[in-house]
Image 1 (spheres, rainbow, N blue to C red):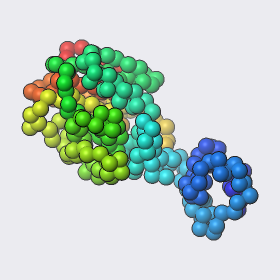
Image 2 (spheres, one colour):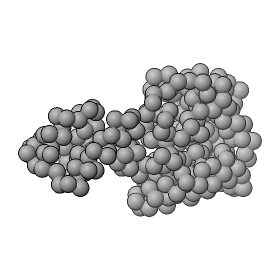
Image 3 (cartoon, rainbow, N blue to C red):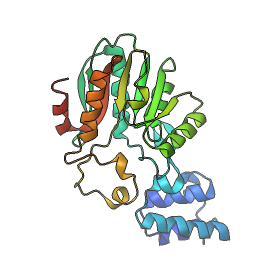
Image 4 (tube, rainbow, N blue to C red):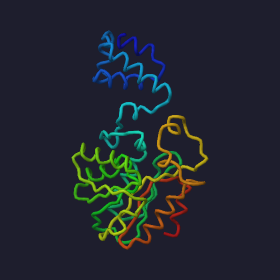
Length: 263
């Protein structure tokens, strides 16, 4: 089988086909177009069929190839963590702006999804960020790369997720402090002013999702109660009562901004 044969016979999207072939052949997509006659080895052919069928069954490309780009950097992903979304780059942007201005702000980052920043005290000179529900670590690591002077804590209830975050921190040559626990439990004794950043589960439990999300991504990172706001409300409550928390920046549904009205 040649590259051209594989492309013509594929039963998946063209872009997905090219990503998988590039991964198998360890080349860029330009090479696929300039060398259509190149033959796949027997091993490459077997691997192509396996990966093609996994994608045909709607398994996300990121899980198949084991990585996803976020904020211009490549992150390791496994089925133990949520796949980083482009919308969440907007959350990172708002965190960086919030650290500079300290101003409350709501920003549209996707259809019916917002990033919202709310101060709980003086934001000036804050040097510590706690990323709650870090998953792959993409938010925590990106913040550390963008602002090396920050001290960044990454927390998650999942030990396997924290292992992925640690691998990504090592690959990115940054030091983040990984701690296991629910929401702010693992930093309850932190005695320095900080802000919380989080992309918490915010999908209503009965909402129907696409197969590649519903069947493959971790449900504990997606769903949170009847309207999707259960964990968000708990996080806000913990942030308000922590003596050193000075602000919170989260990704959530537009309808969830009501939970910040009395903050």
